[in-house]
Length: 406
Ligand code: CTP
Image (tube, rainbow, N blue to C red; front, side):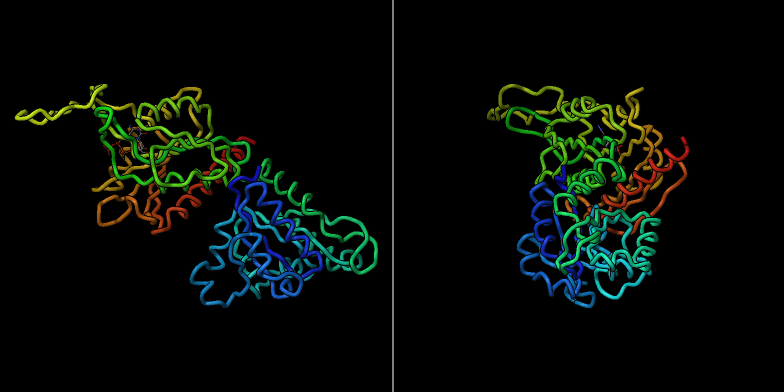
């Protein structure tokens, strides 16, 4: 259920912090990646060492740590997550959240995030029932913050009542429900193409290109992270299969075409693959021999199916949003705008792939989002950030179309 989901777990300083260690384990068992932020008071209850060992990641805590900020700034921490979970959430951290106070890393991340937040409160029953706490909770609920628990029961302080943190498995169930029903792209199906295609000349030789698959794989991961059921159709790459994604490995453009058509219907299609435009007309069953004194063979090429165009023209199976890439070396925006019309897709991500940009195979990308209403320039970003931003735009598009239909 949680394969590939990235959870940022904020542990604040309450006695129930010991349960968050089990929560990390339960989330990881289900395939989630868990990154943790500890408040200073949390470190009085659990050690960063245990949290780090269980999450198999480093633990963050210091807003003013130069190394932390250089390696992973507070903005990046929330950007890299699909959901923020605060467990345990003390009355203090909820008060800060309600007031918009950011005086440590945890509260600053909570202020800076645009991701959904789930809170698992934990406190003494009288603190829970206090008018100030209840007012803060009402404020947080009105802003869309989700709650898991608290439950009623015996407390560490010897009292009985409401305020006990929900059990780790109950919090896991809330998180699973979130991804199944409330995540921005829950219930949507996406097809993403990635990587190069290999076009056989004979059983041992082929024509290929330099696509690394980094951008396409990152897009599949980002869409899945937002709850979309994602099929990634990819040519051979060195990229790891994104967790939680149905990966279909292919070699040729024809195989990519067949896999994409077979994956319909879908709501979203993103074609990031560098599909070979042509393939050798004849793909012999035996290796072409280099006979002494003969001229090199010429290879006649025929055109491959255009997958992006075919998805855009798939009639009643056409995905509601079809996004293509335009890899160009000259006249970027003009060529990409013409490509949008020619391919009949909805959006084009235009990128300059001139050798000096280092885009092919590199980790960053400078792109322009071209829609029917014009071009929008995005700054140079990590390919994973381009993917996250695109996934957010896609989610926003479906939000708007749902609202318009209501
Ligand atoms: N594409 C595709 N199938 C093809 C060729 C391209 O799905 N046979 C998709 C790519 O995945 C990309 C978009 O079409 O999303 C544009 O690819 P690009 O190589 O830039 O364009 P071409 O159609 O090949 O046009 P040109 O070579 O003239 O630039």
